[in-house]
Image (cartoon, rainbow over all chains, first blue to last red; front, side, top):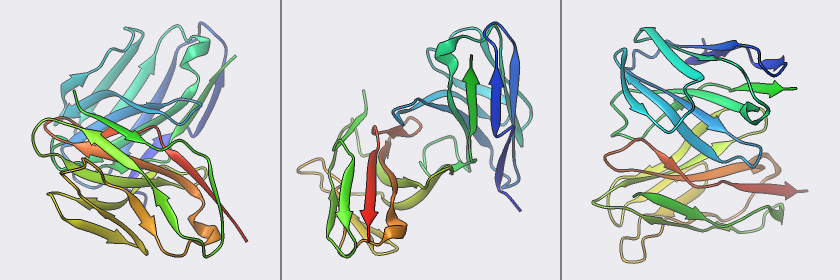
Length: 114
Length: 110
């Protein structure tokens, strides 16, 4: 049973479209995250939610909007997609609000914008 | 702010060679330090961690020692295998979520 699962795994779309990536964790963790990994493998945090409440919102364009309907789910919606949004997006969870540092990652969602 | 610097890759080694991947950090306070590994097509998974100075984290033959005096957390393995081919990330956690280094790609050839 996958601990942190993301869908879809691959997403190919045209510039200007709107798309969503879903994430679910069955670990009972309170905190969830979205990270972006660029083509050079650099990982950068985008958002963090603790028990459905936004606690970290890094410098990310307003076109990116996270939504957490409950503490087991954190979805990412992206409006008006641009070429530079092409990346692998990783969802992660942790038992505490990031302090412990041990994150559990999903397998990633590779977004390609044409 | 907190930051992590790790050696540029890629690193290519023959099977059974000794591995060192350097990692240094800048942080306020007393961060915890981590190594994560990303196998091809997968998400990151925790390899080992150390939460205070002089702690040694170890797992699957990999080791790293938290050196406060040199602000380092170098990853070592005495004898690498082809299955160790992956991208390795050094990371730190203080009073903020994990900050990652840029990753080092390791390729081990038979």
